[in-house]
Length: 287
Image 1 (cartoon, rainbow, N blue to C red):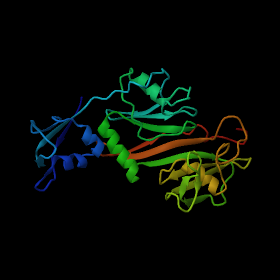
Image 2: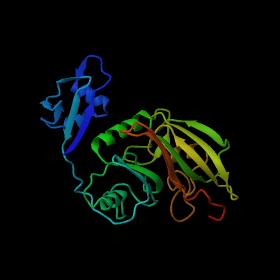
Image 3: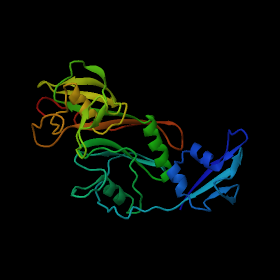
């Protein structure tokens, strides 16, 4: 059972406890999980229709969760940051975040479960594809997960990536505003189409290699599936060795790394900037 305690402040008059919990970051689904008898105001057990006012003390009990379906694999984590609410790790390439049917590779979830001795609920706030390396944030409790997922939905969690491009774009610093949708039903490939979802990407070329390839810093303002890969291919500079949106020219796969995350801490309400060094930023024409 997870217990949250809040002091009510800055409320004119009184509001329903449900509305107060939403202000604290509880999602509708998380509120629904709070069992009958799980909310207390000044020590008194109440229902969701009860009201709170300034200086009230609110306690909420959330049911215990278990990640019983995720196993453990003892592979050391590259931990970038950890506190009582979140764990941030630098995920390597060729590692899925979650277990899935048909996958035989070790996953980040299994490594995190081993790190916590198998007693943990795995909640990845941001997710990276198997072949994308870099920063992944794991929430340690359901309220932290709800708050940070809302940050992502509102665009308040900022991401920066580093990518190895097959060539430099004609414009070295630019923005791409092109809607994206699934190519067709049942196909993982995405395409730029007029009726797709609004998609916006910023990029800056930081290095041009001797063989014409380029390294770029990329900021996806929206968060569409495969957005960076689709947008860079759209402007004629696909990721190097991208089997889906470019041309496969070597063993392995593309190089894309989540190098920076910027967000407001879910409980401390202070800005947090996390960085993970890019493993291919020093590439030369020989790599």
